[in-house]
Image (cartoon, rainbow, N blue to C red):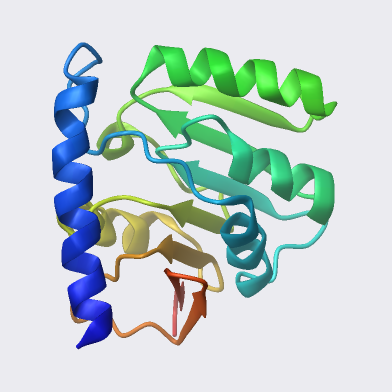
Length: 176
């Protein structure tokens, strides 16, 4: 009950923020950064390790793939529709010293190829998660992990759910 209430409050907050970003490209989800503590727990929950390729869908300022490279030894790709976020993410990767391990692509998630990822992270809205679900299930290899901040994937039961402060993190593995 509390989790459902929290999810609706987040949806309302995000909807309210949409007006602030009206001058931005037509975004399905406004930019709301994930707290660093939650980023690290998402990557831990996914079991990110050296050799993993982490894709962050709606990457914002790049903090998830940058952290995956810095602290977990992975490489990463961030995808976002907003060119300003891509510029910011590239600058952040340069400042963090991981520009050779990560890249950021301006693009539409529904037209992007996820087949090279073995970890996918996202902080999107429930409707976007549900729309992406069949694409992720089709393109990701068995054993690939998907981690979502705050929103589930409908009737696809997460194999693990954890709480980090006020955030909920969900984990699914392709083929499970």
